[in-house]
Amino acid sequence: MAIMMTSEAKVLITGAAGMVGSHLIDFLRIQEPTWDLHLLLRWQESLDNLEHILADVENPSVGLTIHYGDLRDLISLEHICETISFDYVFHLAAQSFPKTSFSNPIETYDCNIQGTENLLYAIHKHSPSAKVHVCSSSEVYGQVSKEEFPISESCRFHPASPYAISKVGTDLIGQHYAQAYDLETRVTRMFTHTGPRRGDVFAESTFAKQIAMIEAGVKAPIVKVGNLDSLRTWADVRDAVRAYHLLLTHDGIMRGDVFNIGGATVKTIGEMLEHLLSLSKVSGIRVEQDETRLRPIDADLQVPDTSKFSRISGWEPEIPFEKTMEDLLDYWRERVRNRQFLSR
Image 1: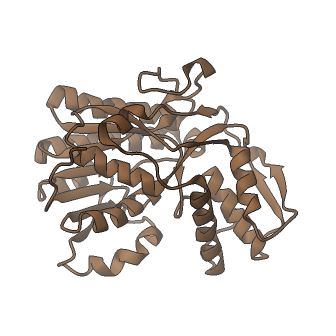
Image 2: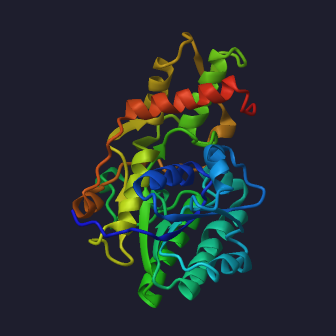
Image 3: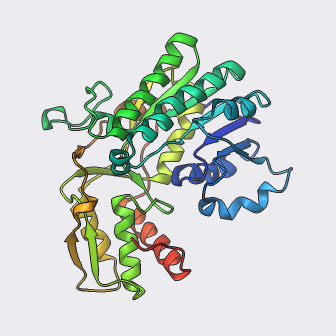
C-alpha cells in the first residue's frame, strides 16, 4: 500500500465542530502531528465537540487555528483562502439532517450546493494544487431495488429527500472541478456512520440519548421512534475519518474519483434499537412510534459495495458495531449526567 509523504502541510477542515470534523481533528493530531490545521466554523456554532482542544487554539505553537466564515458567504471563504495556501481540504460542512431538509429545502440547497461551489471556487483560485475531499453521501442513491444490492458507485441516483438532492449537487460539483479545472478532488459517498458526538436528530443517537435519560430518571421509560424498518450498514466515525485521511494521502487515488465507504454490519433501525436496549441498565423500556419522526419518503435499503476503495487504499472497517453502540450510549450517559442535553 503506497502512502504519500505528508510531513508539514496546511489543512482546511470545514464542518470542524461536527461529529466527523471533531473526530478527524483528533485523528490528524495523532497521525499527522506536524500538520497545521485550520478549522472553519460559523460564528454562532456550538463548540461542544471541540471543548477538549480549545485550550490549544490559544497556543500559536500547536498548529490549530479557528476561522469564522460560512459556506454561503464567498467573501468569507476567499478571505481565508487568499492568505493561506492549503495542501489538503476536508470539506465536511453541510446541512446534514435529511428530515430537517423537508422543512428547510432552500437552506439545504443553498448550504450544500452553492456552499460547495463557493468553497471549490475559492480553493481553485487560491490553492489550485490542494487535494480536496468532497463529502457526498450514500443518500444520493435513495430508494434502491434489491436487484441493485450491494450498491456500487455506478448505481443510478434516486434521491429521496431535499438533503439527498443537495448531495447529488455536491457530488457532481466535486467531479466537475476535477474535470473542468483539474482540481485534485476526491468524492466519498459515506454510508451510515456514527459514534460519540453524533447529533441527536439521527436515529441511533436520539435512541441512545433517550435511554440515557431514562436511566437517569429524567424521562419516562418510553423511547420514541420513527421508521424502524430501514436497512443500514453501520460504520464507526473513527473508521470513517481514517478512510478520509487515506483518501487524500494515498498515491493510488486519482483526481475526481468517487468512492463508497461504509461498515461491515448490516442491521435495520429496529435491530440497532434492540441492541441499544440490551445495553440499558433499565428493563421494561417501551417503544412508541412518533409520527413527527417519520420522513415523507425514506432511503430504506442502504447496503454498499466498498470494494473499490478497499482494493485501492487497503482500508477496512476495524471497530465492531457493538463497540460503536456502547461508546455512543456512554457518550450520552455522560452528557445526561452533566445535564448537557435538551428535552426532545
